[in-house]
Length: 596
Image (cartoon, rainbow, N blue to C red; front, side):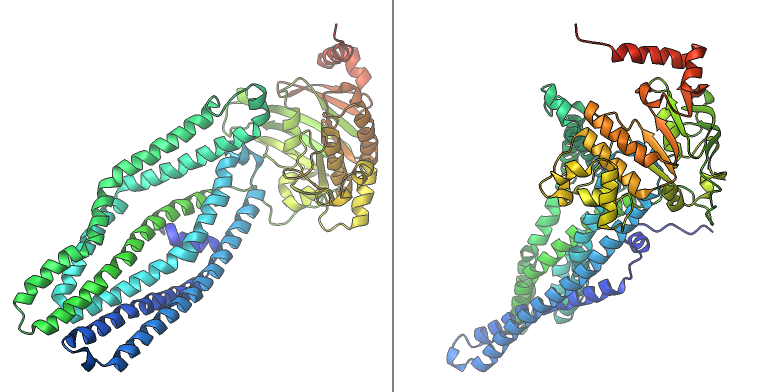
């Protein structure tokens, strides 16, 4: 028999690896706090009984008794608040531990996923899962869960006491609450509720993804004088989420109104029932005092019961959030070998490699078809070809951003699938066309190439990459903050930072994806000097559009429509009068173009 997969809170404990004991202790403390905070109700009742029973002559009232219960009420309230604080501290400690473990687990898992996963899943949706869904757990674990435990325990004890005191008035107090809960239970157990919650979460994720895209595209939007309404996707998703929220409100408004009416109207049921029962009671005074206790206590019950309903809705939302987290964790990571194979040298070989971005696609839709070449250690291999020919795809297969559909990629005679990701990343360095700088200092942006490197090593790498000079001119030098929230650098400066990372890493295989794409002539000279330092003795694969940068490459592979159609040196390829010759002539024509 197949074991049923856990869902909701059970699955949350499972994926976070958290122990439930801290939360159980916090729940018991919260239950004690709730009970202590009900003691003042009993004390007020006792004081009123003493005062009312001696209403004819207050001088006969036992003021020692009255003050005793007054101090008891004050002490219980203080103890209750202290217990509530202690429970809150325990819950927050447990919640932050769960959040920390979950975020570390998610971040580690995302780092092991192939790049194709991120192409298929918008960054806004991933961000929403990691931030919104995980942060949502903090509010639930730290606040709602102890409230849930405390409320259930305290309500059970209070209603048990009420039923013992007078089972008839106890039932009258309990019936409207039970009816209200039946209404809510019908809502929560309705399959449509779960679907609506999933639609709400999906709508929120879609809106977040569109918002991220809108912000990233702001330069284009402003350049063309567009507004949020003209950015159709974001406008449509905001409108769709609004319509869904309104639809959910319309669906449950009747249940909600009835629920709150029943809870807030307990006295409406209790007062007539008390008057009716009073007529048939022999000891009117004793029953009047009992009824007084119910009239004082019953309104205080509605608050925790209402809280319980909101907690039920919170549990439903958490279940959807846990499902989203679970789906992210269940995404298939790149396979890892049990034992990493050691490279025998640093030759890079593509052995009859075919690749499709859509697994199971027909051969006609393959992005790469039968790619076969070897880049020897200590040589430069250039990949050139028209846009969309597959040059960057070839480069992305080397670090296993995607896995090949057929064939094999080898380094030093070892299939990269037989290398641990850590070993593969230590073997290969990259300088991509689009450089990403973290929201951190220049120093840390370079040191990411080799975590733990000392200041002298970072500065030496920066000098070799021809960027020490401009770094020294920055406001705080190497401690200047750059990236998303800091100082902006030029395209050429960013690429030299990326080269400094690669120099610091000192990997034996280097992949350059149009490393001079954003450089002006002055920067290009400096970048070429930096590359000369970086490439000495390495196995180098260069993706180039500026063909003059690869004239002296040891071999040039010309790609067209996902195939290698020509292979050789610059002079040999020109003599063949093929694709490379055509690209060279087009490059020369473009280089000589002037504005008439």
